[in-house]
Length: 337
Image 1: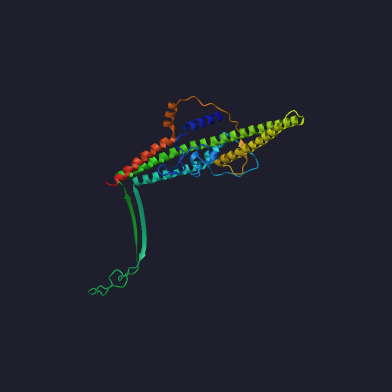
Image 2: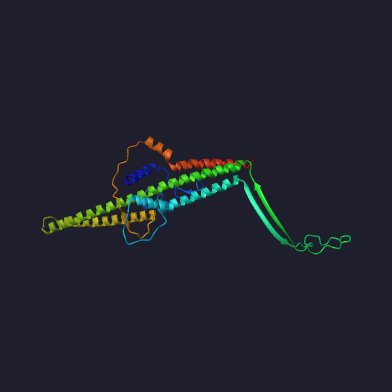
């Protein structure tokens, strides 16, 4: 399972476009949220040059689930990906967009189907002849004048109507447009799942890398302590000059600061990962998988490009949006006839 996740992450890294670093927002055609590729999830940006102007990226947030416990949870890469697919905010919004597109298609389909309506009414009334203009009529010969009102009376009315458009190019084109829009939204949701896997994978690996940096900084601190002690002993025995002791103390303080910075970076990366996969903000956890370096399989630019053009969901979604736009144009033109 771990090897499969590594391969999937490697495939997603190849699928990340170099030019798509747009700000997250709602796509009016695809009824789905856009799918930016974060370069550094810990920095909450998809483009380092646009950090100051970029809004909140929904793929870097989630819907927290559960309550925090005192236990330190061990999160594997597989568990992190599964939690991201369940609680990531970007994927949730994308699913809602797909549901909206599905509803729009059903509404367009209902316009093509026979429209059956039924109506039933029962009423009791009293008509004033003066209000309807009959109060000033001359008396009828031999019958006298009309009464002031008609008296109480009631009636019942029941109707059933059926309407069907024999052929409407406008309605047919609108249905085709909504159908293509729904398909584009479904592909966009599939692409959103890939983005969630990518974001969770990158964030998890950043936590693993930060943990390794903490261990490295801790080892360097231990070395600096030993060197400082050794230098101090040499100075006391007048084997080394006092300047060496000062250098050792500076190196020790530098190593301590390096460890503090590495620990802060680790906690920040863990906070980012927890926010992406829906963990409570005060839940303590750590990576349980020791992910090492894995060389990518050999590939060339031509094969990678052809594979991306064939299987990338966002490109197929864009093609479906183009077809939907063409059908919408046809529907607008059909209104003239």
